[in-house]
Length: 213
Ligand code: TMP
Figure 1: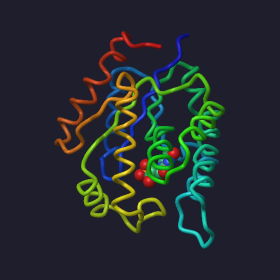
Figure 2: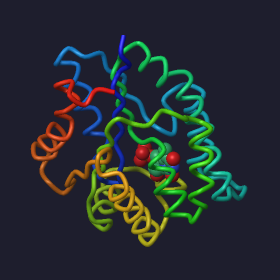
Figure 3: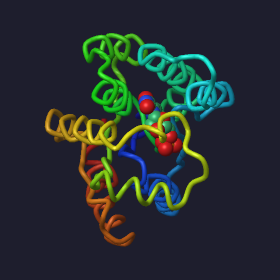
Figure 4: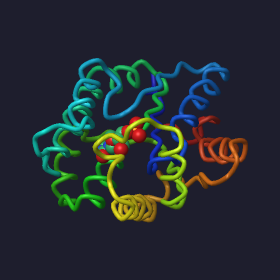
């Protein structure tokens, strides 16, 4: 059996990822595919515990390096217990964030050494990368206004400055330039049906089987 297709969604806060992820999961299921919709950090019981550790406000300082290692700890657990088994079974995996988030948030946003991030990434998931990454892109001011309007109190990362999210967005756009085949930019300022149309177009090669690994 060939392995399943691994799709990830990325973007800054307020890009509308969660809505797209839920819709995409349903849409793929309606077309007869077995789909696991998941998220990072988290996705399994233990990895969700790591998510709480890394996102909750605490009294102790959490360095950018510690934050990076916790993201990868959660990812390693998620890979072993959900992503790899699901792909091996031929299922589609749709994950709300993966390693590009570490490159953008910890690397570009916090200034963590990119080479170090790649070393850990290679150790944690050598030979496995998303087949297609949908980058939901929009101006930072628009994303933050949307996010503030709909959520409760900000977590440790949501509470960051606008300048931080500008660096994160620039980091994502630099990744798209580096890997244009894998990373597809979606205009997230568009209305929901237009966003869905862009996602369907980006995934077309995978749906027809032309892009299969
Ligand atoms: P989300 O549910 O909004 O995607 O929240 C996850 C938060 O964690 C978000 O602020 C981005 C952040 N994050 C990182 O900083 N690095 C990572 O590697 C991942 C997966 C998420």
